[in-house]
Image (cartoon, rainbow, N blue to C red; front, side, top):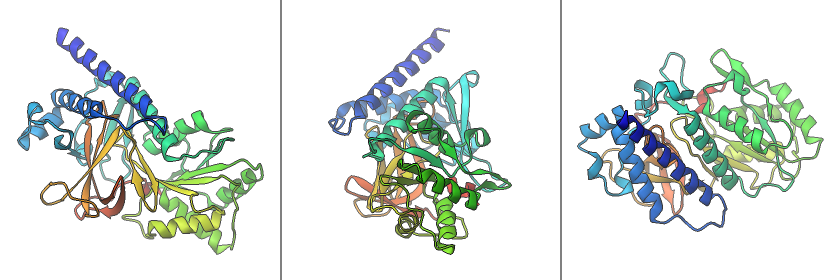
Length: 365
């Protein structure tokens, strides 16, 4: 009982410390985090090494123990595939109130990321703070949220839908609108109805924020192009696309997709933002064609897929993300994506050769 109490106290303290850290990073002009970030990352790693069984076993299998890690870049990054086959969590099953699944092809085992009330609250604090930073500047009049995904009750295990629903409740002017619906093998988007809804809401004159996966954006812009339509969203409107091309029948480079969206929705150069996230993480990166940027409470390491050693700027590497907001699972995750660093941002290059198709794109028609 005393051991359980100590574990609970340590977990609660870590949650509180990360909450406070994120809160201090919210203002865009806040000073860059100092040594506190690394100290907190190492504390979290050691807690998870002791309390996440599969993580401890895996660390030992590659010759790493809790005390041998002395800097944040040496924290072992667990591959996302482990979330498919194992219970990657320090949470008591009785405390789990939500589980986010990765999207995937029919018949495959999805990744599972469990949350308690406390870790779900931290996840929501992280995604909200990250959104406010990544989507800045936000119009003074605010956005009306329009999502191409199904509503939360139809996709209860989607971290993307949970994210959009939470942000919509907190930040949307007017009730968020969800245009998608569950399909036989993923999500469907009734294209005619979506176009009509966007036209109707545009007449109100308030800036719209249209959110959805990259392939939903492709389907929408293809339909508009086929009819020769340009919607002309209200001034200040934005689009947030969540990426995802691999394994689908139509692949569109990001620059081309953003150009299509701007042309068919009547947006300016800064009108389209990419969001990069996944069910196994609690923080997201944002950016445009020039590159993506993580919030200050998450950091990126790019490594050579063969050697595991860090690569330099403008060199392709496997994406590892160290995310303080992942308190209930593991702080460091290896995603299977390839990217190159460009100063303070990174640019996605696609999936590593042996990686499975991943992401919300596999939930689209």
